[in-house]
Amino acid sequence: MSISDGGAESGDDTKGHTRAPSAWRIAFQRAIRDLVLCCDNCIERCVRLVSMFMKVLGPALVLFAHGLIAFVAYTYLLLAWPFMDAPGGFLGKVSIAAIGVFLITNALYNYWGAILRDAGTPPLYSELTKVVEDGAPKPRQCQKCGRHKPTRAHHCSICRRCVLKMDHHCPWVNNCVGFGNYNHFCLFMLFLAMSCVFAATVFLWNFPDVVLHFRRFRRLPGTRYIRQCIATSFMICISIFIALCILGGFHAYLVLTNQTTIEFQSNMINRREARRNAEYFRNPYDLGRTRNFQQVFGPNQFFRFRWLFPFLAQRPTGDGIVFPSLRMR
Image (cartoon, rainbow, N blue to C red; front, side, top):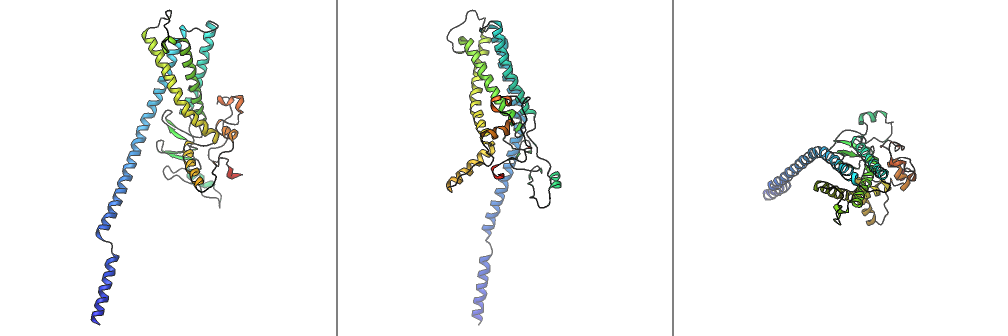
């Protein structure tokens, strides 16, 4: 009996010993936990550093953009325009200059609109919960800024707030691009691209000697400074135009399909998963090209071109919180 009791006791000890975690396992788990915490702290600090850098970079890029525009305008109006040959004489020269002033004025108007207009701020969560009816679904709250987080809204780590229908944070406008200023952002790219084409065409047509080095105009009192300014302005216009063709073409696609840059990435993932499951995925906010276009530029007919001028066109409808979708039908 004593032997069996001893065996039973030893079996119980063995079972208790196997249940207790070993020292190396505990140390390994603690090391993993500390490593994860260290990585989280490093990522958080990196995000803060990037946010601080973007806050400094934004105003610098805005000043740099104004400097480039001012330099090209100075080269055209003060260095190139006085020596231009245009059909119609002086009146033709004035008409061509008026076209350039018209294009760059609209580009600057929309640029300042993208900079100064609020992209869209959701209401406070405490104010929203007071008007929610009983039995209605509880609205979402952002865990970072504490505001209401409706659909299509995202939190910007640089602005430190949620933005309605956020597309991206653009350092060139030192502001988020969202529901309130997306039309100005798109029109700025459009008018800037047209301004670049206009300036490059004028430089190329009137100054092949400077741009393409085909021949030299003896009657042009072109010093080395003037030739360098014209050639530099021409290269600036071509470079910006190429960049705007890529960026502007992408945003034109987003406008016509009613997506934001953030939604474009998530929709690509959803589309791949749907293909794997032999299903068809469609963006729920894609209501057709006409309605998609009007959600950004307002209820204006495309071929009347009033949408090109926000101070004349009707503003986009909606509040930036609720958007019509296919699920509502």
